[in-house]
Length: 437
Image (tube, rainbow, N blue to C red):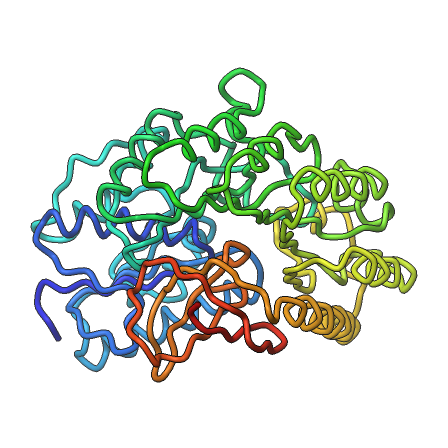
C-alpha cells in the first residue's frame, strides 16, 4: 500500500473520464499521486467513478466496488470512496447494501470528496457552470477529451441520463477556448469534443445552437491539428456545422451521431422526435456536404414493442447506409424513464440477444469491406503508442478506444504523438496494417 497514492477507477464513457481527470488535478495540487485505472492498484486510497447508464454498466460498477471492498478487508486499501452516475442515482441504496465504502458521492459534489480526505482541501466552486476547470489528463499527452456541456434536455423514452445529470448546461465558449489553448501549450494536438448532445450546445444561451461557431473557433487555434465530434443528435441537426467541417482540414471527417433505430414505429415510441425520412435525408446531406466522412452510430434492439418487421427494417437500413462505424446494445429497462413507466418490457431477452448478434454480424461484414477498400491508400496517421513489435496509430476516421487502429511494424523508430503518412498494406475486420512512406 503506497502512502499518498490515490487509484482512480473510471467506469463508463469519456465524459466520466473528464470528471476523473478534474478530480485528479485537485488531488495532485494537494500532493497526492493519482494513478488511473491501474491493473495492479497499490494506493492507500481508491476512488471509483461509476456508470449508471444501463443494467450491464451498473452491474460492472457494483462488481468493481465489491472487488475494492475485498481489497480493503484484506488490508490492501485504507479508504474507499465511490462517486459518479451510479451513486448519484442510488446513493441511499448503495449505502445500505455496501456499507464498507467510506463514503458515497454523486456526479457533481467533488468538493465534499476533496474535503473529506485528509489534507485535500480545495477552493472548488459549486456553481454548475464552474465544473469544467482545467484538469489533469489520463490520456496520452497528444490528445484530450474536451467536455463542452453537462446534462441533456432530450428525454428519450429509454434514457436515464437526464435523470442523473439534470438539464443541459453549456460551458461558456471563452472558457472552452481558453482550455484548448492551455492544452495545446501542454502538447495536445487532437481534441475529442464531447457532450451528451453535441448539437444542442448553446441552446441554453439564447435558444439557438452555437456548435458550428464553437468548432470553427477551436479549429482556428494555432496548434490544433485534429478536432473530432462526438454524440450528435439527428433532430434539428445544425446543417451549418457541416459547412464548417468541410472548410477546415483539421476538423476530422468523422461524426458520432446516435440514431437508435430507423422504423417510424420505434422512433415514435422511443420519443426521438425524428422520422425515418428525416433521418435518411440528413444522412444524405451529411455525406453530400462532407465527402468521405466516416459516420459512427449507435443502435438499439429489443425496445418495447419492437416487431420482427421493425428489426428487419433496421437491418435493411444498415445494409443500405453502410455505416463506417457502428455500436449497438439491447434495450435495458431503467427505472424512472418514460419507457419503464409506460411500456411493458415485452421483447424476451433471448430475442434481444439474437437480434443484437445478427446486427453486429452484419456490421462486421460491412466494416471488413470498408477497411479492405483502404488497402493501397496513403493515409495520415497519428501514433498513439508502441506495443511489442508494432506502433499503434489512428487515422482521422478513428476515435480512441472504440474505432479501428493502424498497426505499423516497428522496423524504424516513430515518435508517439507525431503524424506520419502510412501506406495501408493489409486489413482485418476492424483494423488496418501499414508502413511509413
